[in-house]
Length: 441
Ligand code: SAH
Ligand code: F3S
Image (cartoon, rainbow, N blue to C red; front, side, top):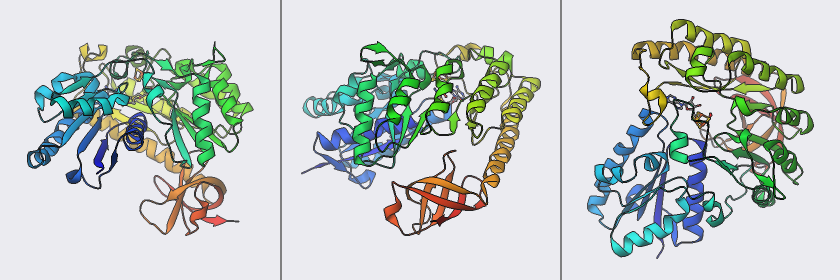
């Protein structure tokens, strides 16, 4: 009889990608199938996130709920993966003895082995090492050919921004080879994928080799655009410091590259950017935006922001609002600063009060929403070519697609054959986070 697996994923797209790989691995190579609920599972996996304090708190709450299930079902195994696992290792089992297996983002391919060892010996299994890129040699090529698929091109990060745990939890930056990536992309394209989203913490610093020589993200994008059926290419996330001229030029050369990029600025204050160790100032960031807009005038930019970083004054915060007004960012993410273990910022005095942080976040988010809604409104009355992703989550009578600038569009249709294809949608209405339209032909 097949064993049943249930995975819960916290955090970023990288974690979503890793969880999909775990499922492929356990379904295809081991005798597992999907559990419909947590109660019927034989193996519960939590893929964790430690980027902010709140994310980390969620982990032990979740384990607490699963422990209750285990009390009635002693054969059940609980495995904890991802960034909290990498950061805490054995401490997780010390604090939560119901946990059987702890593995990191770079050792998820060892999950079947760890599971079997636990079953055989009943000893807890922990492997949070960083064997460079080894996992890619063990994982089956993922994907069922969804219209849009993620492909991880690089793992880890060497930037050591002063606030960030990622370099510690995901290890040093390593890039896959271009041949390996193109092989994965071609297989996905054969199965029906039309859009590729290259993933990494810092994808524009990609240094994978091509024919044995060090190459670049620009080259990878050019080669990918030549693969039949790949009609859109995205990448996330980029660091402004490494957004080099060859990458800017690709926007001119490769029409498949979408007119949207997530380019986190974090703050508009040079003083704070320096304390964050971001390696650029506001002027450099703005001149990069200008360069990209010169080759792609309809480009839209989104960003991440941190408010209330140690030492952030009202003036520094105002400079963040100024850069938002200057760039006119589209749909962005913003967070209250929270000190993370083993980061240099955690040694700085966290001197902005929580009330002040919350107020700044409110001001910033309402400005971002205003701008974002402005972009949506401008689309009303236009026709947009959208890649149709599938049924709308809220209403099965509607389909959902994305514009080239990354806006979600919902429209009434029961033509399920459209999924995985491009359609021309006339935009009728702008909502806060999406557009509504009708199918044109
Ligand atoms: N490599 C990616 C992902 C970083 S994590 C990048 O450069 O964008 C995603 C976002 O979380 C960051 O951009 C930052 O805005 C936020 N973040 C990271 N650490 C944080 C912390 N300690 N407190 C608050 N926000 C944080
Ligand atoms: Fe984190 Fe900075 Fe890398 S935000 S993931 S250390 S680029």
